[in-house]
Length: 80
Image (spheres, rainbow, N blue to C red):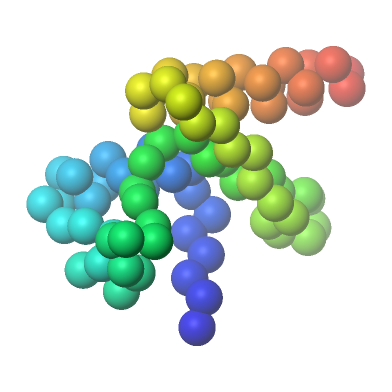
């Protein structure tokens, strides 16, 4: 069964860090295949729900999160 948090990956990573847990204990995902790290943001459509994600990687978790958040906000602003 899939688990869809519909939250930013940075939020999930910080919550696990705060609770002293990891992705294996929390979700049963193998550590060699998954990592809880910032940089992915859910994209939702009104009346539909989550339709995808925007993801970046290569900087610190906080910088990745900020970069993708700013990009989404700029795109929304460009649509008026």
